[in-house]
Length: 218
Image (cartoon, rainbow, N blue to C red; front, side, top):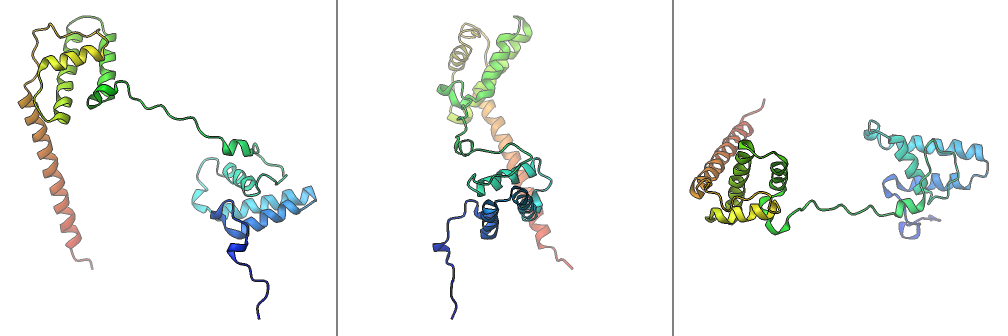
């Protein structure tokens, strides 16, 4: 007859389950120690055991700092010992990080991407001249290529010039220019040629891997 069996359903929930029930019991024991010197000694021993349970993290920066923070978290912030680092608080643990801003500058024309907007900003900062005109024309051609990648259809140069005018806030204007962008068919052919080249390259790699896998190993 076995008495005093403990079932997980009857035990208190683990705060950090990764360390298991024994670490939790060791921390609970440390909390109950009244002698301050002995309590600090036990806390350091627990840190050593926690470190041995994570040998793959020994080379991680601030590894010891992480262990001490986890020790206080496991104790539910009830462990009163001296720590070589700042003791975390319950409020810091519950604090939510600030939401990250999504780097979308012009959601109206998402198919151009953010790099186009950066290129436009650079072109605006340049002094007027042949280099700036060449850069603006290059940007317009790239915009046309991006447009065709997503819409899979022909597009008039006037549409691209209009979008360039909007994205540059009226600072880059090719709407009255006599310049002509690269023909849509040529851009589409370049895309198809690039796609075909990638497919052949991937196929060669696949065939090579297949041959290597089929070789006999002795």
